[in-house]
Structures are given as structure tokens and as C-alpha cells.
Image 1 (cartoon, rainbow, N blue to C red):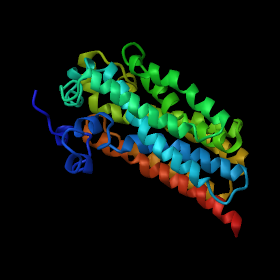
Image 2: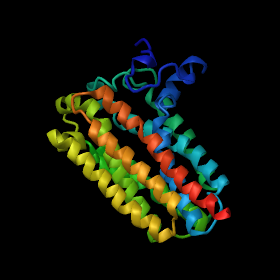
Image 3: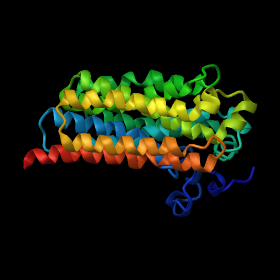
Image 4: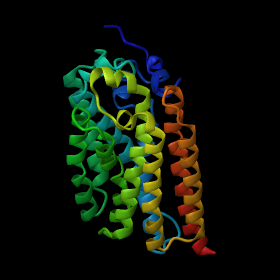
Amino acid sequence: MPERPAASLPDAVRGHWADRLAPAALRPYLRLARIERPIGWWLLLLPCWWSAALAAIAGGQPWPNPVHCLLFLIGAVAMRGAGCTYNDIVDRDLDTRVERTRGRPLPSGQVGLKGALAFLALQGLVGLAVLLRLNGFAIATGFASLGIVALYPFMKRFFWMPQIVLGLAFAWGALMGWAAAFGSLALPAFLLYAGSIAWVVGYDTIYALQDIEDDEIAGIKSSARFFGERVRAGVGLCYALALAFLMPAFALAGAGPAAFAGLALFAGHLAWQVARIDRSDGALALRLFRSNRDAGLVLFAGMTLDCLLRLA
């Protein structure tokens, strides 16, 4: 089967370096890891950075640990790629039934199953190398997430809210920054994790609006289908829950005005997303989904500024 250009995939970044500069033989594997769709690793990374910043606030540090933040960046890229590769291996038959996904490397024949499995192992080794640079408790915490990651691709077959399981996996970084800093977990980290889960469920519900018609035909379950005509209220509820958990997490960690200002801007961005949701507009759904990177960076900036102001 001839290779389908990545530009035909509606959620790919146009003109990404992976499609212009990478050797042709590597491009299908880079697409398998969603390298040309960086929003995924950003959204996996942000709870890690939030957790590192919250730990810095609680520990009276002038900034989040830069080594940890760099390790989390490398790990997020590797493990997001591994997760996508695993997801595509499991979903290779389902993906042929959905317009947005049938051009992916496995269902389109650009990558074979054995090649995908080898690539999955390689990415997993990179993630392991990163994890082993942390303390023993953080290493154990990281390994504890693997069961949830393994379970997620199967949930859309029988569970109406698979986004909850995605949230459990994608928000795990909200525990990692704290675990890496203190070698333990405490209530602020658990509250941050709960808030991050609700955030993931909200933004992935928006993302699922792109596939709602094909999902109905293929019998794939999603929170977008579950909420139906009330999807705006559903996403609004998820985002409200996120804020309800994040506020006490900040307070218990001893956050100051800058962190809460960042949280207020984050809340305003989430409210803007909810107001813009249009169940029939898939292109808008993709733009709103991607905007969560900016929302998350604003929150991280507020938390980091809160740390820096302690130096004054």
C-alpha cells in the first residue's frame, strides 16, 4: 500500500520537521510515536512540571528542580511515543474504521507489527533510563503506572468513559515531581493528581468530538458520546472538578499570590474553552484541545514565579 502523507492526517502539525527532514525510512516510526503531533507529550509533561513546581513551593525552593524538569521532558516524549505505539498496536483493526486514524502507520501498512513492537521496546528503554535517574520511591511510583497504561486501549470497547482511565495514566506525572523531590507522597500531590485527572477527562472529551460520528458507526465508546448534547456541561463539570482539587493542593503546599494568579488565569482559559465548544465543529475541537498546552504553561509559570518571589 502506498504511504499516505502525514499532512492528510487532520491532527498532524503541518510542515513538521519529522515529515520534512527525517530520513524517509524513519518517518513512519516517528508518526507512530506521534512526533509530528507534539501536543501529546506536552500534555503528559505538564502535570510532571506542575508537581515539580508544587514540591518546590512546599519545600521552600527558589525554583522547580531543573534536572528533574529536564528528565521529565525526555521521559514524556519517550513514554508518550511508547504509549501511542502500544495503543496503535492494540487498536490497529479499530483504526481502519475511523477516518481520522485509518492513515496511521499500522492500519495503513507503513509499519509492520514486528517493527512496531521493536520500536515500542526501544522507547520503553529510553523511558526506563530516565526513570532510573530518580530516587527509589519515584522509580517505584513510575512503575506503578504501567498497569493503567496497559489497560487504557481496551476501555473504549466496553466503558463509556475511557477518558477517566486515560486521565489516571496521563496525570500520573502529578505524583512524580513530588515523589522525585521528597521520596514520598503527601496530600497536596494526591490533590494535584486528582485535579489533573479531571483536566485530562475534560480536554480529551473535546478531542473526542472529532471522531464522534465514526465512533458511533464503529461502536467505540467515549465521553463525548456519553455526554451527547450536554457535552459543554460535561466538560465544564470536569474543569470545575479540576479547579476544586487544585485550589486546596496549592493551599496545603503553601502557595502564594503568584501561584494562585496563575491558577486564576488557568481557570479563565478553561472557561473560554467551554464557552467555545461546538459539538459539530471538529476543527474547532482540535484547536481547543491543543490550547491546553498554553493553559498548562500559564499555570506552571505562575507556580514558578511564586518560587522565584521567595528570593526577593
